[in-house]
Amino acid sequence: MIFNLDIAGFGVRVDVDAAFGSFRLPASYAPFRADAPDTAAGAHLLTLKVRPGVASSPELIEGMTPVATGINDLGEARLFADGDRYSVALSPMPGAGFRFMKMEPGFASAELRLHPADRFAAFTVDSMLRILFSQAVVDRGAFMLHASAVVADGRAYLFMGKSGTGKSTHARQWMKAFPGAELLNDDNPIVRLLPDGALRVYGSPWSGKTRCYRNESAPVAGFVRLRQAPLNSYHAAADIEAFVAILPGVSVITHSRPLYQRVCSTLTAAAALVPVGILDCRPDEDAARTCRAALADSCGSYASI
Image 1 (tube, one colour):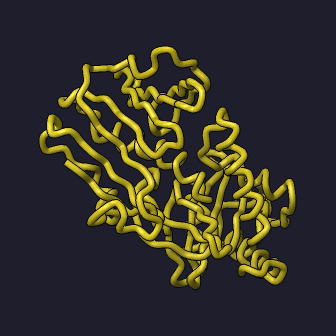
Image 2 (cartoon, rainbow, N blue to C red):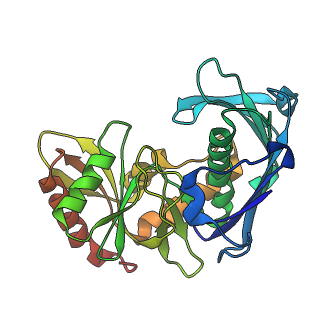
């Protein structure tokens, strides 16, 4: 069965073998369904092939070198490399074993092996597609950002920070402080530098613990890195400080030099188009007001705002 999706203006195909019977993608994908992978403005980006395999298919990493590992909401993920080819081993939870996906150079295609009766099948497809998508968009002038995105008066503000800093809390303060402000995505929005030089942010099927799956977009009005503090204060970041404020939130395989260099170029351009700032803040509405006022003061220096 074929699932065609439109995510951030990119066409995505999930090709699931008939052996998986009545497999369905998680409900978060419903707003992103498309008639065909080229329905999206950006045409076809990638295909994820889901094929039957034994409980695990370690042959997909044979001869490859482990280069990174991490534990987050995806479970435990391990990255393997062989030249410009990458594979991912993913364990949904401790003791659940690993599932394997092999990605082709350029990330336009990948194969995921699963047992047809795997109770983690939908979760694994969701997680692996997120990993594949976040790499594939880099060569299209885009990046997935670990951030909360709020739209106010038609423009989007992206809030970043270490886990536990309060991105979601700050986003809620904006919605309380400014009538009409809405959440676009609470964990993994997609930022695109378009060919005409515009910078836009898009919702995605991946929004962390917050059920906010909106297939919508808005022009970016600013990036803000949050830090917990006893008083609310904002300072504008520029040049290297602005770049470093955004970079830690970007989902990119740093082991791939070409991929990393491309995302760095996109970030540099993005940071020159809109304000970037650091907000030391409390979890209150005054923090939201302080932040928005400071960004408004900065807008005059940026032609795209």
